[in-house]
Image 1 (cartoon, rainbow, N blue to C red):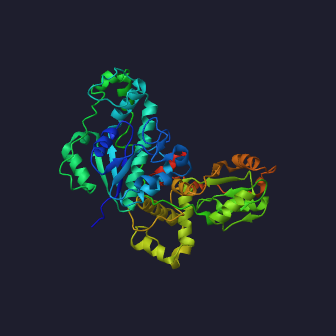
Image 2: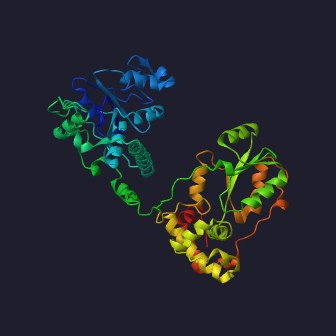
Image 3: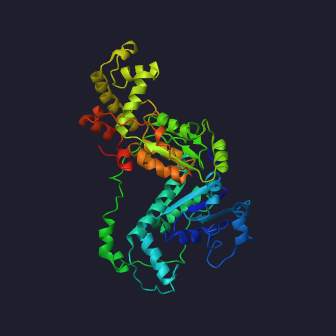
Length: 463
């Protein structure tokens, strides 16, 4: 059994009907919704600079103080409305509080966008039955609309994910539900107020713009053409079933030459050659932790960090060679018995012909495609994970200043060295082997693209 809720938050956005929902809840005895309590531009409601005895300056200094003050109401059910652009410092406290009910209110994003633009244009944000709506029409702005949709979607996904990982559930409402007495009654009962037999929606607000979109949007035809470019079903999205990767800080190498260089390696890339080049420039430090990395950065102002991208086919070949020569016997046996890569017995590996290796490599590429798409029980190894996913892991600690493609090292390293305060890039110490020509076989190139489509798209690799 879950404990009864002691407080609530309404996750909503502008022009989703949150004012109407707040009015409905505030009409109930023992329930109070304190408006947009954490809106950066006001305290709960427009033209207010104080809420619950706390000023805007005090809220700015410590938002959790206001949160505690609003929620500290024994025997009462307090709450507020929270939008995607409200104070992010209270987000975790709200989501981690299982006694805080989460109400998620949504509306057709195009209706919300048009309604918001109309409200800004007319400065009419609420309407009761005695007031006259101000007639107006807006100009649709495609990039502005897409930015709004993207921000709201990211926020809603973040809320949903946090509810899932914390084992909570929310009460989802649509704009059309807000005038349904049965739904409002169900919401209030879900909040724990089963003593209230029926909840009627607030009647002091009426729809402001009940006209067709064509009457509210001046460039309606242009809007229709622009909306055709939006892909609501994400049909063009490249699926990603890889697990998120950590930053792998212990693999980083730091060189004190010049202002300092930090190499953030992608496994099965040209790591040994890059470290040899750095050693020729000056002392190199490895086995870093996040703490020692931050300390090193403080001690080397002006430092630069970089990573090197290798062609996916070349990198897969390196991973395959490591499997043959340095991989565990257990992993090779898994490849033979489960993952359709017909490796010979370990004792026969040294005598394999080049043609046999290429045949097995083709099977290995097929395995990589399945593995990276989450179709195998074997976890994705760092040596063959997508480079885009590895670099996304880096970004959880620090993003590299430069992404250098391996075939451009000789041209791009001098720029990196110059930015790091080095007079001599030390290219004499750089020993890079190009991708073997025998890999440029059409079927292998196609198999690599199928396995690493995300990297091909993300980084513009060509065959």
